[in-house]
Length: 316
Image 1 (tube, rainbow, N blue to C red):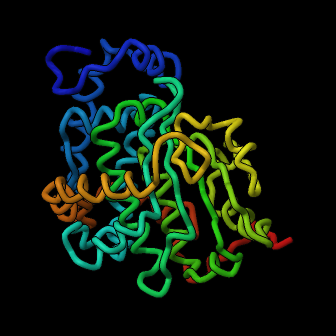
Image 2 (image 1 turned 90 degrees about the horizontal axis):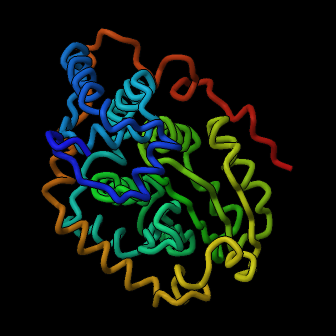
């Protein structure tokens, strides 16, 4: 990496991955960051972090396309104003938020088979206590974890993330206990605005009526993400192990990593250790009075319109 940049060096494996898959040219990074900072100064409405590491992470998420970078960063900060139930009060020491963290719905797993593989996020629907909190609270913790991963994990940024979604003992009705307007906004946050690149979705322990859930899931996806790997393993760990061997899975999934709770506890402490960083993020966003461009989350979609509906959703 260019020596005058304040970014972490990466391994040769990740360098090659970034070059081949993300069009990364090390020599061009300083001029790319200079162009980005000039754009941020000109547009003025974005209040965001501008350190080299974060900007480079966004560039990698956009495969070094400056136009895609502008769209994604603008969306990343603009969405905060319409999702306060997710982006406000991100204090991991708050008793309520801490209890949501302790549920362990979203659990990053530490290992992959190869250093160039996507990192793995385990999502456990059955751990969601709907009597205590709502889905926006779960998404809040998910974004808190994601912000730290994006800041710290170069493998995740360069290689992307694969999700194992354990539907556990959930029924299809469990998934419709949400406000659809909120789900649309959350979909924009997690796809157009999130700099973490999704590489596939693997469902395990799928309930009766899963086709309804998967159609809803797909209806919220962009066309690009709809083309990603989406596999239902039913209740078969053997099927899951064809994609994720035992060496990288917790013991609840027939793996060798130990119990999931170990990683829930680790992430509880990690979020608390980074409390100041997460709290600082609450002051970031956009000032619409200074905007000179079109708002990316309003333009060209009906996500926030009163007449919006799931036109692509088919309940087979």
